[in-house]
Image (cartoon, rainbow, N blue to C red; front, side):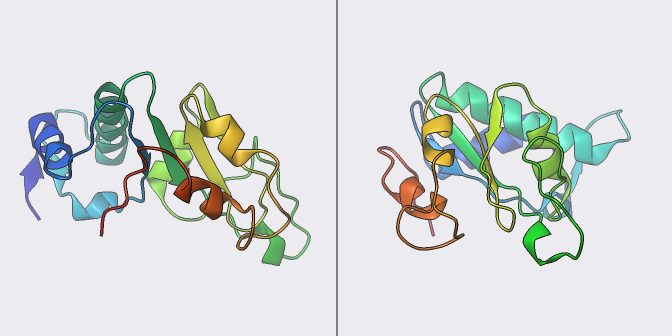
Length: 151
């Protein structure tokens, strides 16, 4: 693991050709990045802020960011899913993302997705009562113009 800075993140996003107007589905493993070069000792918060700020700047006002915010609530005894308050069970960045202004979340109690950008509400609302299949969030994401499909 090595140290990284904001310039390193910008270069990494350029390498995978993210540009203005793109819609991206972002999964994260912040620990894999290394340690951000910062005086702030909350490395997860710093990394999350840098990633989100840089991506918003790159994709511009017409781009969208989608982040998995899976809570797996449906499978938990006596748990009720609330898109506004249920935490994601899959790491720091999804919960950081959920706290941002203008972020919306799907109503899927198992595998919810959160989104930011002009198309996010259309994509995440009015979905079927199933995490997969016809008219699910994942199918809707695949139909977005300028959706990045990188392997």
